[in-house]
Length: 316
Image (cartoon, rainbow, N blue to C red):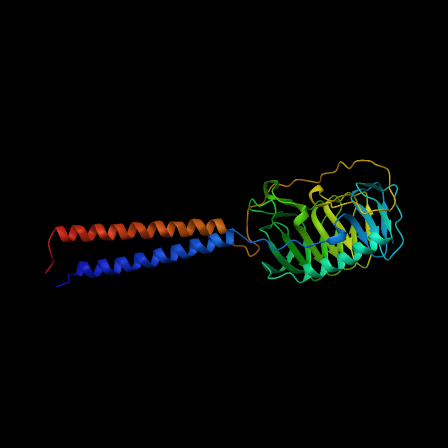
């Protein structure tokens, strides 16, 4: 005859097994979220060497320093050079390299806009977020504070941002990498209308705007400002194409005074790591691990009780 302790042990073991299964599932789920897969980088083609590219005109006031080519096509206006200074590149006004770069930009823009699947969608203000590599979509994207990009130790990690409207960053806002790991070469911003960078802001990545781009006074960019149909307006900015993805300087064009840029932007302290949806992968791992440990302890305790009962003889 099976005694009461046998039934209790069976129920105890069943509960422990259930807890163990839940813990393992949560641990695996959290681990998968913590190791995001990077999308494919956007190929800029012959636009690679351009730090600034516009459709109608490039305008500059104050002393902007641009490392990389500067171009405009099909427009033919580029006032403000000097006082604007171009290093590691030339000024291309409606010439063959500028036209070729615009054609390549059109292809790159479309590729970025069609990139799928989104890691997260419906985004607006990116301030306070820590985002792993992926594709992030929203309407009017903005940054009112600090956006942190977590490459998860992968220097080749890729982020693609898709704005179905505008991109606007506040004054003194920052885009930065966790522990400096990551490359502005692999951050892409596809903007369906226009982009505006706030004064003294620090920005990472290549902006590809359908219309225009404005960089307010003192804004710094590690990346590119590429506008398809409108203008790019500069005001005492530092725009630098990272050396790792600068490409070959386009032939021809006009050279300006060779003064080396010194601006490096602002380095922000990393924010607590949260996925775009607010989930915390690390917390999930810890919680799942605790459930696994608890379930194992329950199983051991149940077995010990069975052994003690067996040693004391069967119950009637």
